[in-house]
Length: 267
Image (cartoon, rainbow, N blue to C red):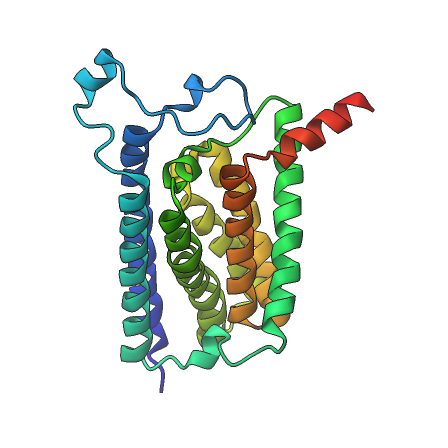
């Protein structure tokens, strides 16, 4: 019989630890790229700006010490370890995979793909709206992780982003909504709100507005999870959103949000 109380307590601790280290990671991101005030305009992607002036070096003697590849490896390893910890918690407390939504859903790829493309488009529309009113989330994290060669892109798309999608969905949707809902009987839509708030705080490296945007994305993913009952669908959707952002913005240098904002401005 599952030990639901122990599972809930251990999962809460894991989430708290994750949020703590996420907050600390903002310092690392600041070492790699410039702060938002160094950018020319809100919502315009100028690419990574590495601090190299003498005054910045005086404050931080090695700003280039963590390259994009090392950052990708760091993210992959840390999220992989956290995923292993979550799996260990589920195993020790005898929480079945079904509680996470692992046995639910058919046609996972196309449903997750459609959800991911839809959420990505909504994210770009929200960014265009933010640019129109003069606000935008910081792009420091995405810039810092942007690969500079083919091997880096293979690592990002083939390893790092899949690991991130699996862990974050397993924790924020599978555990905090699916498993806790099964163990406590709390309405999953109520759990979805708390999960979305934690998901937003987990993206603190993207700034305050980034937390709000991530929270909205987390709520949307929670809605997909509750509606489909499938963890795999939201894993695919999460991967599609992240991969699309990196490929469109960092690989091809496109900014759909800025283009949409210009179109709206002309009307």
